[in-house]
Amino acid sequence: MIGGVLAVIAVIWILHVRLAARGFDWALAGAGLMRLRWIWLLTSLVPIAGTYAVRALRWAVFLKPLKARPSLSNLLSATVIGFTAITLFGRAGDFVRPYLISVKEEVPVTSQIATWVLERVFDLLMASLLLAFALARVQAWGVSLGPTLSWVLAFGGRFVGCSCLAVLVLLVSMRHFAEPVRRWLVATMGFLPEAHFRKAEKLITTFVQGVESTRSDAALLTVLAYSVVEWGLIAACYWCVARAFAGNVDLSFVNVLILMAFVAFGGVVQVPGVGGGTQVVAALVLTELFGVPLELATTFALLIWLLTFVVIVPVGLGMAVKEGLDWRSLRRLGEGAS
Image 1 (cartoon, rainbow, N blue to C red):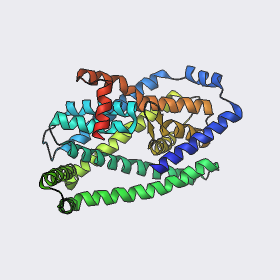
Image 2: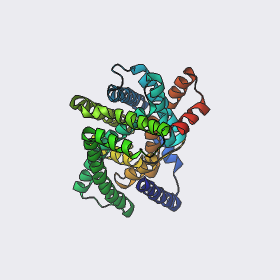
Image 3: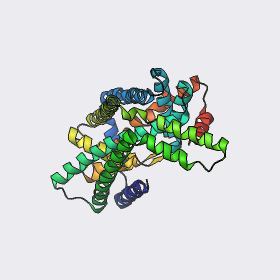
Image 4: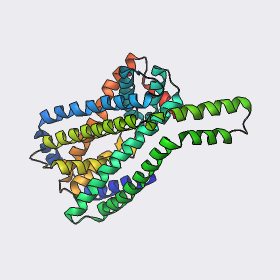
């Protein structure tokens, strides 16, 4: 997290220096918007909507050890509302979804926090593999990079190695050592008074139950398949945005994957209602790596953020209102669950 913050600060600094050096050509940005192929932007809504359905299906696999037939409609509404909360409140909103699912499906909230951790593990794996692909392609090109992007690439290489190792350790631990770890954690709580010990034991047990799905080979393969589909849909959304800019910004599908990899890397930082590394890293990669004018790169980056984060907010707020939740309720859910 600290590394991600430092990377985003560095990117913001270089963009600020560029703006201070030559200003921002609003006429060029406006012309780029006028020449957009809006049909492609509308098409991009289809794959991005599909990502929420796939996330709900993947969560259902995680949930099966606790509930054989979870409601997909409940999971989908909780997913949409949860991502709305993330956009509005930053990372504190991450915990809205597991809390809502625990209430709707009548399972312990601790188990769903464990499921959220599992989801992050698999997304980290996919993002790391994509970033490894991007780094390999960029290095194969042998292009001359500026000092800031070179530093980001070097840091990204270390990030890939560490994150893949961490994912491997976590998956092996959850598959083979969950029960021994549970017993050890419970044993370490023996100094607590009886009532508190029982509560601690229940929390630990339900958390371990939340990672039970990884012990099944079939479930593990299903989760991996859903993860690939989810990231494929995100790539399709990026490709649609690239096609919308055709004539102004010409990116191949491989270029789109490289851009997506670095944006996923920058998305570690999420500022409530504003976003974060998503926009600034996208703008940096487009300008430094692909030679896109800063004005068009900024427009492209903002559209990516709007489509992947903001577009779901009206839908999520509508679902929240339907379920009796308002703005304050969502904020309290996020803060309380975290």
